[in-house]
Image (cartoon, rainbow, N blue to C red; front, side, top):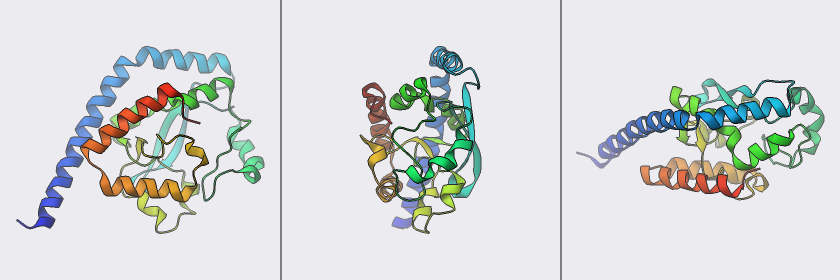
Length: 212
């Protein structure tokens, strides 16, 4: 058997095992963390009763396929309407918008973002198959429209809950080009061992509140 054929078999096996692992771990986590999920949902509503606890948004998945991403709401209800006025203050290069002291973020939202707990509803996306536990973060379509052909390579795999960028300290201070290089590095090197390394690093990031 040719080396190329062996590589294809290994890749298919890895992707199959990864999908099974995603289903088992996400289902298990949803059951075990259900009290925490309910507590966070209640806290979000109490902190800002003008909106619901969960925010959903259309994101770009593998191969440009659209899906609805879920996360705990960390911004005020009119956040999208206020975005245009904040664009001039964008601190990220490239198509991504991020500012350190975004005035749209709620009090509780800052804590949820710093710990990554706002991302927990994406366990549902993982269970459905829209996302994987590990993979490049899913972008907005308005961001993808500004991608170069090189940057679009990050859409060649299923997006994930965590990745190299997600576990990087002060990740929002990194350039978008650096972010893309991290994602392409994962795509090149992805393996069962690397996935688990990133999962454990994500746990450390949550406890150390290294997110932004």
